[in-house]
Image 1 (cartoon, one colour):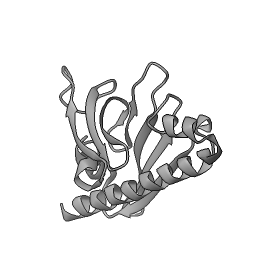
Image 2 (spheres, helix red, strand yellow):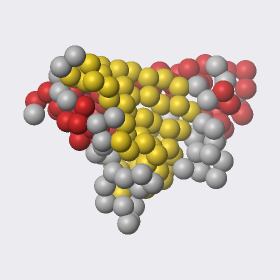
Image 3 (cartoon, one colour):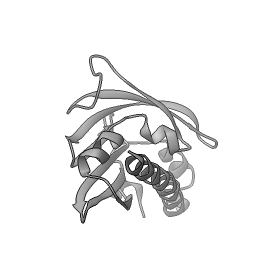
Length: 164
């Protein structure tokens, strides 16, 4: 699996709550920080004060092997009860995108959380350049880390929505 192919990962869970109730939870930009080991916090960038198409926010991240870094993200998916997601911005297209989708399922909602690498450069690119023969393993390991954290986030979202 090569970085330039823009690989991704996704996780899903059934939530015993309406899509609108789930959206109210997942559209909080600090939700992932409650469960994810990497995102520390997020802050809206003025004039944004909440979820809206084109709104931007800063994400503050930390990883034991990579260190600390900050990114600017733009909300590109913002349909109440259906989708909420963002792209990490960059002159080269940005290094990632993250999207929650909600689909009615029985008396509840199928909550899905998907992420995709690229097309822009990310913190993985220097490692890939140093060890091009290990690119497949580097990308696969990073996607596995993402999936582990994403699972924590949707399980936490499920618990919050079902407790209301």
